[in-house]
Length: 182
Length: 182
DNA sequence: ATATAATATATCAATTCGATATATGAGCGG
DNA sequence: CCGCTCATATATCGAATTGATATATTATAT
Image: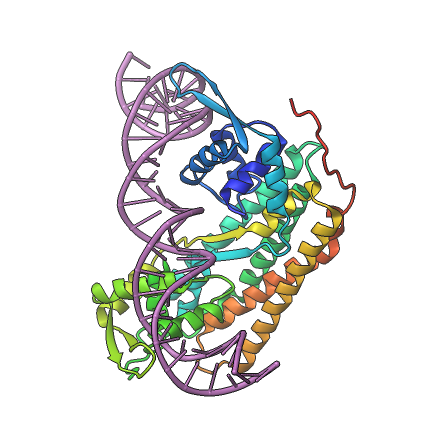
């Protein structure tokens, strides 16, 4: 399950350009599967070369031609194959938590700032989730509601934990400790 | 904050080889910052070339020489610089959630298997967290306890959500739906 | 006896990230 | 009306990362 497969899945909802897909990656998929142009455009080119999507070029003045992609029957079959994996991964890459591991090397002010900013970001996500539920259509698949709900549950738990336990990182600041490790 | 910086941080706890660091990445850091040999060894080589760590080669018979790295004063300064970023990222890359977005294209059996396997994996993490708290020393920095606690809070919330809402993905299976998108 | 796991380092192709380049129209403030 | 930012739209590129594989030996389990 790479960017290619997620693009393919998004195209089951109807034809779209790379630019359109990027907006999906930013909004509904943003909290668990980010992708930039540097991944999306090569993905679409590759899918097209493999015959999993067809491409319709719509000329525009000023802007580059708009390339609209549509999933093919082969693409649909390929997607079902990719979805048939029993144990898909769920990975976190957190510079935030990595930073907090070394809070004892930072000043309390630095730590507090990082904690505050994380909570602000979580609030941004929670707002985004609310907006999604307000603006989405009835035919929006269950899976989208499910992932947004899970995002909300996880983000809320994280916020609560930060508010309740963040203070332990501010206690006994020990900068410059460990004068002789060996 | 890349693998290089995290390695540098780990080395503030004492000297270690790439192999040793890999074990840290698998255990205490595993749930929020995974890294494989393909990242760790080049990172250590680069840190060494930049003078942020020193390297002591210990010959061994049979196995390759054990290379033990130690953080230098320059490295310590560099680490503090890297830690001085107010808004470190926290990113999720979830093939699991991406798959669940397309649950309506899968059979209920397939979806159930994926959900079950995710819960099993969460339980593995929760066990790992318990073991960490049992086996860690008194001088273990607050930050490590904090990140493990946050991991536990987040994983528990996720498990609860899966148990309470997973069933919505099994309702109205609509495989082969959308016969004419255009 | 055979297979697997642990110790230990290293490389490589494929993938992804993050920034940048290009080109234009719309809207807004000074 | 000039300049600024934002939105539209595609594309590339170096750097970082992933995941697999190679090598070599000993210890443990089947």
